[in-house]
Each structure stands twice: as structure tokens, then as C-alpha cells.
Image (cartoon, rainbow, N blue to C red; front, top):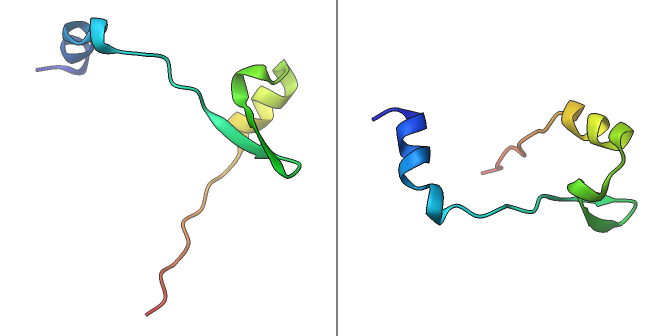
Length: 53
């Protein structure tokens, strides 16, 4: 089954997901950002912390 078929099959069950990010010490939804800040958010690089033994 392809990705598009799965998405179409479950179309009625899907809901909008709010994405929050930390800005200046507090959390804000990304959808409330202006166009420049949205572009900045897309360019961010993410890292994973290494687990110490």
C-alpha cells in the first residue's frame, strides 16, 4: 500500500497538529510566526544528545 493510499484511507481520522517551539524562554505555536520567522524555523538544524554510559 502506498503512502497516498494510506493517507486517503485515513482522511477522516486525521487532525491538525500544533507545532510549538521555544522562543526567548517560552513556548509559542509556529503558525503564529511571521513569514521571516517561519523561514528561520525551517532552516534550523537539530541535534541528538549522546547518551553517556
